[in-house]
Amino acid sequence: MKVLVPIKRVIDYNVKVRVKADNSDVDLANTKMAINPFCEIAVEEAVRLKEAGTATEVIVVSIGDKSCQEQLRTALALGADRAIQIDTADSLDALNIAKLLQKIVEEEQPQLVILGKQSIDSDNNQTGQMLAALTGLPQGTFASEVKVEGDKVNVTREVDGGLQTVALNLPAIVTTDLRLNEPRYASLPNIMKAKRKPLAVKPVADFGLDLTARTKLVKVTPPAQRQAGIVVESVDELVEKLKNEAKVIS
Amino acid sequence: MSILVIAEHDNATLKAETLKTVAAAQKIGGDVTLLVAGFNCQNAVDAAAKVNGVSKVLVADNAAYEHQLAENVSLLVTELAGDYEHILATALTTGKNFMPRVAALLDVAQISDIIDVESSDTFVRPIYAGNAIATVQSLDSKKVITVRTTGFDAVATDGNAEVVNLDTVTDAGTSSHVSDELTVSERPDLGAAGVVISGGRGMQNGDNFKLLDGIADKLGAAIGASRAAVDAGFVPNDMQVGQTGKIVAPDLYIAVGISGAIQHLAGMKDSKVIVAINKDPEAPIFQVADYGIVADLFDALPELEGKL
Ligand SMILES: Cc1cc2nc3c(=O)[nH]c(=O)nc-3n(C[C@H](O)[C@H](O)[C@H](O)COP(=O)(O)OP(=O)(O)OC[C@H]3O[C@@H](n4cnc5c(N)ncnc54)[C@H](O)[C@@H]3O)c2cc1C
Image 1 (cartoon, helix red, strand yellow):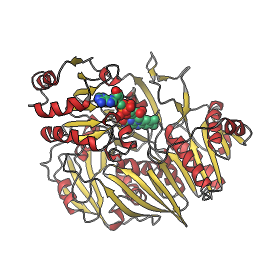
Image 2: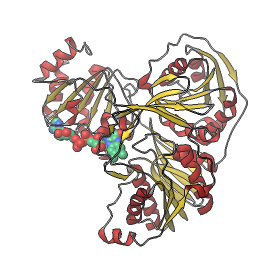
Image 3: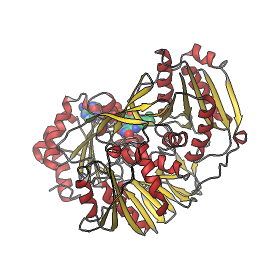
Image 4: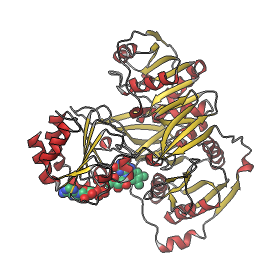
């Protein structure tokens, strides 16, 4: 069984993003970039399926300019077998990303596609579900457990009320939540080995898709800043302030 | 303009968050229809008919919709979509699950997690864990939107909408529900509570979360947690507040033993009043707290409970 893992290059989760002075967008110049944490969990899950003998091949794919090859190499160092970069300088809407991924799914015919539930930059939480719709496949989003059993996969999902388990016919789409696994670190020998693993570059134009933008970013502003508060000296003072100043308790 | 809002419910009750999504629809402006897709969902339908500003409630009552399976619900919404310019769902796990599927089936983009409406095609949404606020214009003729409830005030519930039963059944047949493991709690929902008290890694274990119970009882609060507390197994996943968990904005948020990572702040920094209890005076949580107390939580919590 082939497993496909689409991954995204994003700002490192420890970095607080700045907004450009002209409010046109965020400023990512000289910012530390990394593989989106949820995508890393997706890679880890696929590699574990391979180690368990369930998966035979793990393919990672990323859409972006040459810089995303760095994240593809990271995924290869974590245990993926080969990588595909869909080369484009444009930042695309989730729908257009899903359309490109649909082409890769048609070409590679994976039994399972595992994606992160959201990227920590755009915070959209859309791509996996959209890919599922376009391919007509069932989806198990926000997964905290994935169990392949015969021609089905059981996915336990983190939902608002707790956990929900669904059974999906394979092939299927899964998106990861934080508790699915704890990704490993790439070892130095594996980082070296990853440099020799295959990485195919496909120009976006080769897909023959209309990728016209469906949304326009009008402006980006910093969030409202909270007024600095005070440090109280005692629990008594805290209770007094909450009652009489903030008036949030009685 | 016609707007379709998909009700968030569990067949027995209509979730209070739906009232905020309807408020977002009213801000867009137009005739609002509410869809209740469920199974044996008459109670939810009755509640939906009372939501102010809704002219019609569409009901799809069928086993295919009992567990809100995205494959089935998205087909239903897509079938109904022709009549509406805007389709809205609440940005909770149910809406987040099926709504992008609807958008892709309709070949339109989705605008996720809006916190404000600028015009009928332009919306405001946080990005980068709320460290930037984007104004986004939809260029599609149909707008598919999920609504972050902290951005809107609930509409009232003394309305009287017409109820129309649908006989369409859309069952994709590719997925099925196996089981639920839901957290049972007498406390208010995190999203609906006026007061939230959350514990972090500093709580040390699940047992110590009992220290929050007495305070929550006295304040009628919901109890939340940081990711670290959930990952460590102190408390279940549905208690996680943050960028990738639940977004809350109560009148009072008390963070206990939580450092204040940007991912946690993303889920609570719009609270009206924030209190932080932390033994580290340098913890970033103090930068957003209105009232901070530098103390060991094991001393401060029993004292606070005693003094409330
Ligand atoms: C992709 C991604 C998504 C994430 N999503 C979320 C999310 O949705 N929500 C979220 O919360 N986090 C999220 N995180 C994790 C986040 O980055 C932090 O790791 C997490 O919030 C830390 O939790 P914490 O504050 O409880 O733990 P820590 O950072 O370890 O802080 C513990 C705090 O407790 C204090 N403390 C310890 N003992 C005591 C004591 N006895 N008395 C008083 N104070 C004490 C310490 O001083 C410290 O400040 C996410 C991370 C990633 C990468």
